[in-house]
Image 1: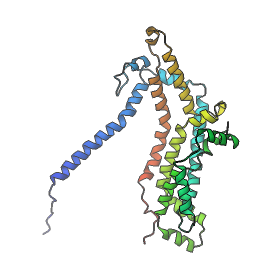
Image 2: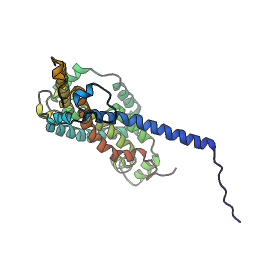
Image 3: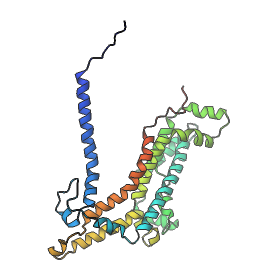
Length: 300
């Protein structure tokens, strides 16, 4: 007669689960609070927000900050250029860095170690702002869209991450493909790249966030080209103008007007607007972060 055996309940297991649950709840609150607080500030009246004490909900509801941001003169132009530079810059940078990482990850490539060391040096040494400005001017990148994506094609850090990931793949995959007559480009496209989806998604997200949030290159290289401005640069100019207006107030009566805007509420509204596209894209890439390397793999 079969008797069911019940595993005895371990008190340490229960205590660990309780501790883990409490820790994850605290971690979730700590992670979400800055976002919720920023949203609450963005929907609060500017003058009232200066008093402080706003945490999870706006005290005096107002959409003046959002209307101010959405009424910017070059909002649509900046948004369009930001989207274009993010898409083109991410795809081109990912393609170039992946090809370079594939070459340096092959053991048959004689100068892999020397070139890898060269790229590591570029992570610590650079020419500085003025030499870079002169170089871009001589290359004809001033007042052009190319300065947004050509200058970021190669990233030593991203390339080394991709190279390390590719070196961890089984060599049997490449050897079996070569026996079937496949060339290196076919191996890269049809065998290596499908297995690199997790690291591709990670690098793509890093590059996309950098491209979306970058405004310094627009200020330095495309300042005179208003048709090539980016959203972040326009928001920075708006925030600067609001700060100047706030600091130039001459009386408390003017500063105490109802339904006004202040730098803290405009900054919060701008932060909410700029983080929305990244939040929308992240769920589509997040599933690749936990993908293993066993799909399509060959056992040794």
